[in-house]
Image (cartoon, rainbow, N blue to C red; front, side, top):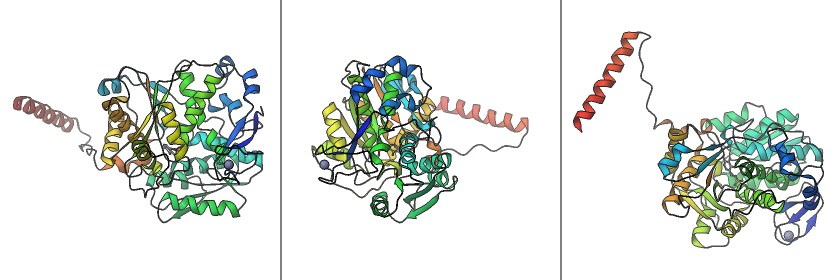
Length: 420
Ligand SMILES: *Cc1c(COP(=O)(O)O)cnc(C)c1O
Ligand SMILES: [Zn+2]
């Protein structure tokens, strides 16, 4: 291993040694991990990858460690499923779901970035890890810190969903709830990171953290039989995941693992927090921050750190961005559950509903291979659908009672056929 050269500013190109830093001190641009791609190309082949264990570290040469991974070695390699039923409903020919709602250990794609961040934090010698979270990141940092034997501090908006809150507290980290939205939490954490000697997953070790997202893209390509999709729809919070999927596909193309499929990236946001999709749709090249107001809390970031580069990547790929209302995202959750038997969280509802919209708009052609990115689990955001679901019928544990219920249903069905 050891193909990491250092860090490089995405804006001005200034290089930095491998350290826990994330912004360029010259231009304040974001820092990106730089690899010795020539060296990797000499050792890594499709066969080598295919021979390895089914987790995200099968692509370890393209991850930002100097040594072997020590945290989250079972993360990743989630199913890519062919969505035959959803294809019929949406009227498309070839649709896949990349399902990180069943990622190990905390049921979201954040397990990938945290595995990379905490493995790197251990290499740096940190004893304490922390994060500013919209929900899923806190779940994963808390869980994987336990596994790694690290102390953890989780900073989150005080009003997060119960599933996200319980799903952090249960691992026993220090949890600090903060009044207001994520953008305030993030600002506070930047100040704390400057003062305390902690590895903040998405602040001072962010360049390393973000590289973990590439494996979501690497896996899609490998699972399609070493082929990049023509279209991919991705939920956006900070805009990092969509950027890294693009980078992953470019890496595999550069190594000659796949032909150029001209993959188009489509960003998905909730209309109540849509600074990136709004910029794309209006032709703005900069982000105009917004104040989030949506039930899709996991992707509710009003001032996205990678927003500017996400806009550029989307346009460079020939893709687009869209957003949907909270009602539409709930319908998206229900559509995926009722067609594919996958219960996703609010962010997944956004992605499904945006995909549907883009297909209806003709932006995603009906006859081309499309992947929908499902990044989180519905059991964590039950509030979104709870009030809309029927109550279970209640009977005594007696066969007569069940027979009566079946009779009632048969009569109901007969009555409704007569009406027609
Ligand atoms: C964090 C998150 C995202 C988006 O992450 P970014 O990389 O910040 O754009 C998408 N889906 C879910 C479920 C998330 O928790
Ligand atoms: Zn710079």
